[in-house]
Image (cartoon, rainbow over all chains, first blue to last red; front, side, top):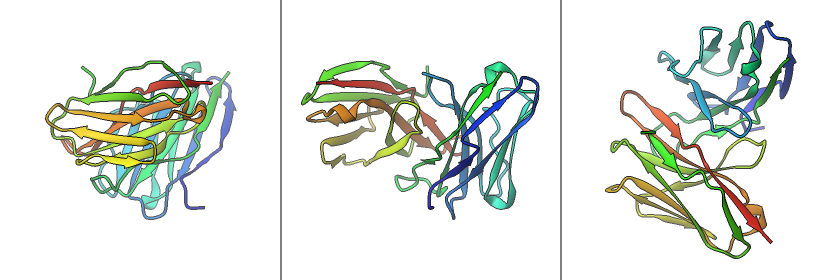
Length: 116
Length: 111
């Protein structure tokens, strides 16, 4: 299993509940990204982790969204007090963290979040 | 102006046709470039990196024009299975490392 792993693959939750989404990047990849994608739309950048540097949180849409990356590996994206507009596919990707053509992003299968 | 721009399409072409996608980027300091493919309700997958000298992988050819700041993808002899959204991706180091995705171009190949 060398790919990026995300769980759960599907999550249905009631409006107002908190959810946690998990991403397990490719072993050895120092860079980790979270994106979300609504149906028929492009990728929306959320947050980027690179090694021990402070994460780039510039894409988080509100303070209900937070993410952490423990031990430079697994990451969790937490959405508090979910709203219906949070419904989307949440995609995690990792890369080697080096610049250049040999560091493309590799995506997980995503978590499809539905807020009812 | 968006940092990475693509024609959203859709492009509707018959099987066997040659189709070209262009992508422009605004940051002249961008360093690496990729084309991704995304099938409906699936995650994006790397199609090919774009080398400065241009590169070819079977029916797919990618080119980079740094002076004009655009990247192209050419698909020859289109197959039904090429139907997907093609995403242009640009990495840059300005103001920290950034990976920017274009919004994608939809391609429909018809029999």
